[in-house]
Image (cartoon, rainbow, N blue to C red; front, side, top):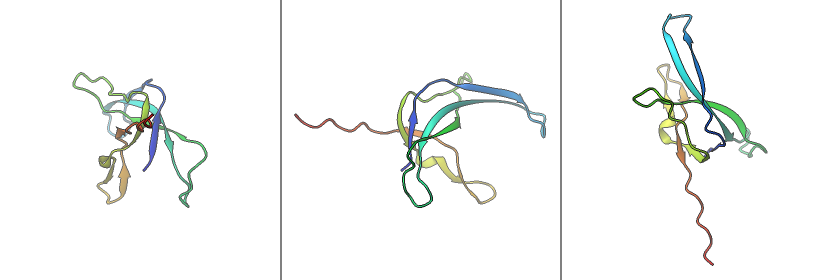
Length: 102
């Protein structure tokens, strides 16, 4: 499981015209922190900064993730049109650990 920490709801917008197609684009990004491991499966000592592209609602507003702890949803991983394994991060909240009974 890859744990993702969201520490801010700030959204960065990037818009412009694609050079290759000439089509307009409008993307929203949110910075998150991924708790990753090295090639041997050992947890890295610090989370790594990652920007994810956000989905939009019907009005075109960015659907940002609230501050909290998440993991990747199963539909984040897919096979692309070239047959390569790809990731398009979609986050699901981690359940908070239950407090010990007194």
